[in-house]
Length: 481
RNA sequence: GCCGGUGUAGCUCAGUCGGUUAGAGCGUGGGACUCAUAAGCCCGAGGUCAUAGGUUCGAAUCCUAUCACCGGCACCA
Image (cartoon, rainbow, N blue to C red; front, side):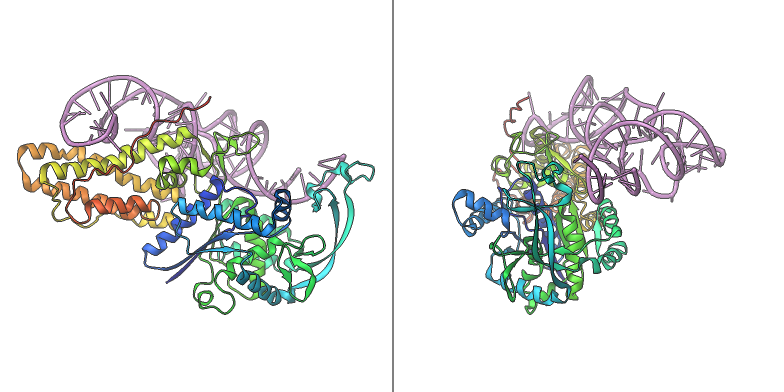
């Protein structure tokens, strides 16, 4: 069984933030869960590096766009490392292979690409066209000091309009499944209205930071159009074995701001290429900070590294997977994060491990004995992961953590020890170890490092006298009111 | 303006096909314990299920209207 998870590739025009981190983690859970089930997995992430914004930013910094791209992409790669993300690929749209394969894709789409004139409002200062819907009407009047110019430009267009109906049907029937449902409804209503053909190239004389249109040196591909192609080029479309084995994408992980590209334009491109559509598109939400939109001007941006450095990758993963709703927007605050860390990770899980290990050491010289097999029904957890409801999956795993603590308090192994019933005590402690190993398995996709730690403690049946605190307590962060 | 969603405990949210006394976590009050990271466990308080009608033997759940908030799309300036 082959399984291909593709994360959206972020535009690397700015520093990675917690939203990027969230997306990495979401994809990572899917990839790790699939691997755990014995599937062959390709999990791809990457960077979208072309386009006018990159060119402008680089110009401001006095470096080439290529230098900026390399610099910025490295920061995203560093974030993945810090979060223990298990991506198999990191594709950059400036990779030679991507550029060459993008040109092949363009050629294979050419029956749906035609040349036409684009007419629109052009913002001279920003050097870009302003879409009618976002244009400031005052500036449409020629006497305005910063008036737009009515410009005409020759572009290539893609016949998106020809495919909206097919795409709509695929989504409606769940052949191409969009989750959560509210996102499915949203995109269906867009598709029902029908979509216009889209401009997919830019003249080189205005922007040369892009992939050249094959056979026309005066045009480069429009960055969005070309970036979408990464999901194919990363597999080596059209001739590589990986493409043959792993296409179509099992789950596509994207943010809610880019549904249109992934649920309308991209599937239309695939239909035009005669390829199967992804099986599932998972649309996640955004993160607010203390209930407010994250923004540099408000100054409420928390860098992922601030959290990871203090609490570790698994704690970060835990909070964003369980306490940011998988189907909605969520909120980060240090208060919430620390409450989750202390109550759930340190006290409930960490302490369950600790007390179990301590009793085995104290009463049985570290010998656990025969550990019985796991006994819970974990099908609902598997289903939750499949539906990308990671928050629910973790809720259910935590029911087991709590259940174990309840079992310990009800069974009172310390009282059994005092009574001298060695056989019964051994049974109870082995059962505790069994529960913890089961929990470790369930946590594997979510908190991989923690899963390993728990296994290392109990798996061999002999507990070594190393003090292993899974989640040490920290000073809480003073919250500026 | 059109479409969709949401409104349930102080907070965040579950609640299936309409069916006993509406649930969980956090927070809060109390209790018993000692294996453990002052952790864990038990018990309690806390609800006009947004509002008003309707259908029904029976409504948080279905229908209608209203209000509030959120999202998407369109439009105007």
